[in-house]
Image 1 (cartoon, rainbow, N blue to C red):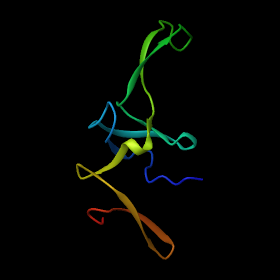
Image 2 (cartoon, rainbow, N blue to C red):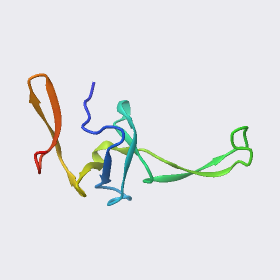
Image 3 (cartoon, rainbow, N blue to C red):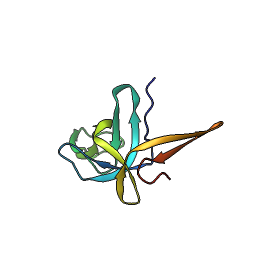
Image 4 (cartoon, one colour):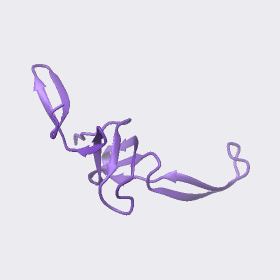
Length: 100
């Protein structure tokens, strides 16, 4: 199983693609496809039929996934690479730039 250095709830910045420079919160990580859903980034229009939950139907904007290699973790307003420090049984995620 692959290990990703991002978690749901992290703030990330898009570093490649059409939405380069956009920031948002990670909503979901799709591990088997190496993709992430980022809040407010990569919105697509989805045409929906009327249903019980949406009686009007129409066009709905929703987030589409981005490849995980196209996003970086944001710490103190800057995109940073992430590593791990292991002290005995504890493993903590740290920024490679600031070491915190």
